[in-house]
Image 1 (tube, rainbow, N blue to C red):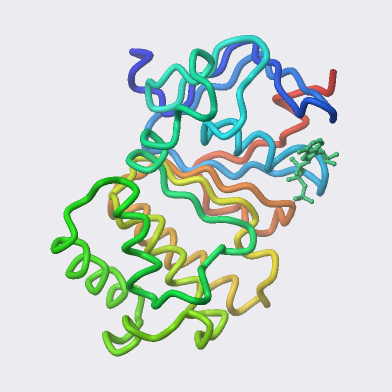
Image 2 (image 1 turned 90 degrees about the vertical axis):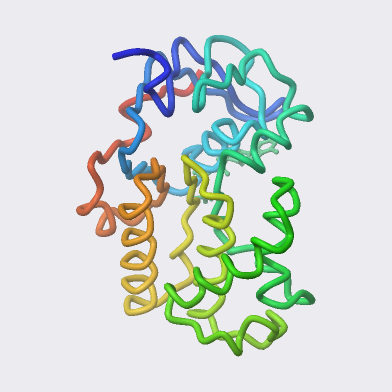
Length: 224
Ligand SMILES: Nc1ncnc2c1ncn2[C@@H]1O[C@H](COP(=O)(O)OP(=O)(O)OP(=O)(O)O)[C@@H](O)[C@H]1O
């Protein structure tokens, strides 16, 4: 396969926190358009690896290419514009900003990616409708949303820039079974429809079945 067709291409990578644990990841290649479930127990380094894939952490050694971008040659501080345009990130705590409206939460992501303002409103409304949220909620302050509505805003925000890669870090960990199932259904519908690559990290292996690949972090990386 042409290396450009890999969404993720890792070789002989060493990474970790300056004053914390470190890992070695000899090889991991993920073809574009694949959905992958990255399973590991709490504390095993899932968020650390996702931060590395997002360009928020720099590797100490080895090669790390995400969507063709050689992140091993970049400082984390330089990667913000790339991240804003190319990645949709769904955080563990969703990170929806309470003091902004739904629309402004979504618009902010578009703003960071330098998207045209007028397009964004219509696109956000479209996405929220797709996610079964009424138009009337667009201008509601996020602090007034239910958990299920918040999740949908987090998905819309991750997708507003049509990113080729979505990184999700335990986004269902605070949800009950019904909300968790709904969240996964919506996320998968949109990811499949758009042909995005999805890396979804969780300790809950019951969520892994519908993914193209299931990977145990301990199978691909070792502590140093
Ligand atoms: N900024 C940091 N500096 C030093 N050590 C850190 C830092 N962030 C995390 N760690 C340590 O790195 C290890 C992995 O942390 P990480 O957050 O990647 O785990 P995780 O698998 O995502 O866990 P969880 O599922 O509980 O969020 C832990 O031992 C943690 O204490």
